[in-house]
Length: 184
Ligand code: ADP
Image: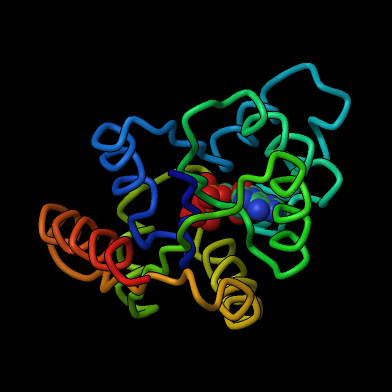
């Protein structure tokens, strides 16, 4: 199963992605975590990545593409991709990469949640890049790109109401995926 998780920061993609990964046996590829480890490594792009993370800006495509495509190319048994694509251009490049293996995305799960709930959750999380300014910037970037990304996945979009308790959302997600799998 090859899934991409779409939605604003703080929507619960990380939490649900890791549960789903345990459930489906497909690896959870967390792009933010991969980038955070680059920012703490000796990599020549370390400073560029660190600066983007701190400001809440997108990391330049050449860097993020390398990190993501390298991670998914090492996975057999599909993946649950969390944090990529965030722009239509990224989605197009992901398609192109997957088409080499004749392995398209099976479903794009769209986490729906209001901004005020997201802001509340992110401020509770206390990650170093969860400052009020960086959060505002990440939400702005998200809203600027979300329509085009969701549009790109057209027929394989699975909508998810991401409000409420973690268990409730997890159940809803499994139901939605089952329903999507049974509708041709
Ligand atoms: P959140 O979902 O809360 O924004 P993430 O851990 O997914 O948190 O991402 C943290 C940061 O990593 C983003 O603010 C951005 O700087 C960078 N990042 C993550 N995914 C991408 C991507 N697809 N393209 C460019 N930068 C990204």
